[in-house]
Image 1 (cartoon, one colour):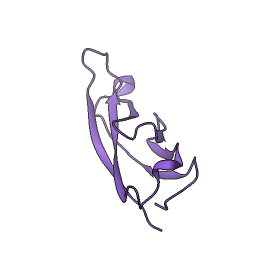
Image 2 (cartoon, helix red, strand yellow):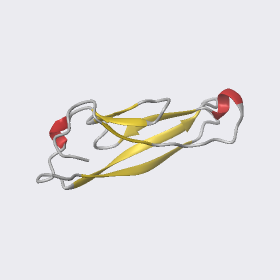
Image 3 (cartoon, rainbow, N blue to C red):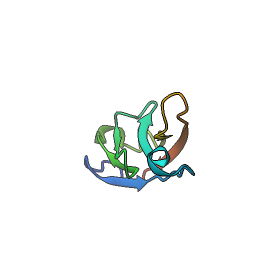
Length: 92
């Protein structure tokens, strides 16, 4: 991705699947970790966007990893989540 990309720039889409049918099989996405406030994620589609462009400076941070959490829609006591890193590498 280009450094200093403006707020709202699309980065990528993540996708997870659940074998449950109906409501329990729906997945929602969120960001966790160090850079969760610098990016946004659409909880339904998994689309990730720039929220704050100040972190997008390859001289300061040549690459970074944001953490995406995917959770199913099962009742809270049986809900399952997983977190995966998404690496972002900056180009000039």
